[in-house]
Length: 107
Image (tube, rainbow, N blue to C red; front, top):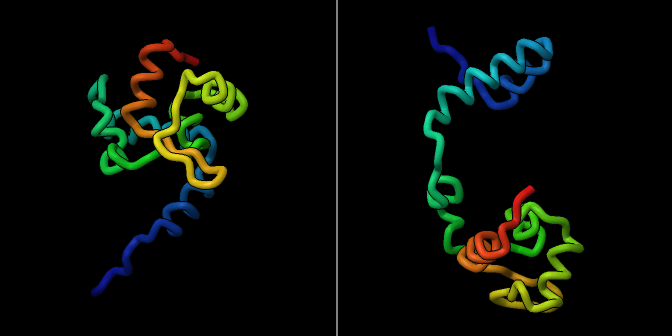
């Protein structure tokens, strides 16, 4: 007997049928077995995006700041985009890591 594969859509529908407490329990179990290490390297978290530029929105998300705050940092010269294409600013991962470390940005 051949079984039909379990798709992401099937999983989503199954999750919707669970009670809230059961979903919380499921994700807690998933997190406890998937993320056993306390510290992850930048490479583990970002993988192939390590060398790819971040858009302004992605940079703000990475720095855990708002877009207006990101714009203020750029306007003041504290944060310099790697490349500007039209109105789009791109930031290198290294620049963002250094900025986050040097300015102690925490939320």
